[in-house]
Image (cartoon, rainbow, N blue to C red):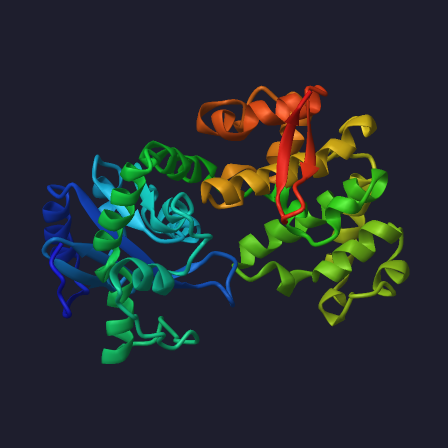
Length: 382
């Protein structure tokens, strides 16, 4: 990919169509987005950056229909991105599709001894190039953007192809390219639109609620999420997390009880909102709600001591193999193993080879852990 220091600004559909027709012939393309979601429920795409062998392109989604790029996203082209999870959501909202093939340089670098590095740290370590920090508070929706803002945005894709080549070279040398590709594919499969039924899981402290309180939390969070979607405002503008948890814990049955709870403010002064919340509270009291698989619930109490042992061994093996521990295995993965969940990632592929078999031996009493006196753990076979 050409190391160009300039960029092309695209703000016409005809220009974007021409770019689309060129991109479809390239084996890989770099991509990044700038967006805002502070004042809205749905993220607002403010700028789309594309890096290709032909150059760097800054696409103005305020003037162009970025859905024009959908056929390229849903093609055999490999899209290179860094820390792409939020970008995937934004792209899907803007184009209706997500990349069919993705190489996330942040995920991939976790297999060569780097733990979730920033783009600037990764570019510096692999290419010896120092990126300008730019202004983190830039209003990307303002037009026109300054030359400095455009240069900063262009840098987000300018070096991604070279980073890809360096990282893949190391991965091939370690025989881990397949692992990285599998992890990137997993990140694509995890990208799914959140539902209002799941909204309560994103509320701090909600998972600790039990019984009736949990059903009320899910019911009220569902109402809040649907209202926020309708108004396209952040959920906290409808009802704060503190208020939601207070409602779940106290289960009000009257307007006076509701309006007297901690976290409730003037936004609920309207009778219609108060009545709606009381109705969803009443409905939620009858809901039976379980945590999703891998959330730590319903594990046999006799197995809980194994959790700390297993997570400690995962961390130790991650250090030995120079792999980001979160890529090797998470607490949710350990919970899934203890549940005997057939879809547990630790029981298949490269994870099973590195750690899964050890964890099964620990669980079944065939192995234990000891401290070597030098700051590390070792596995002792029975």
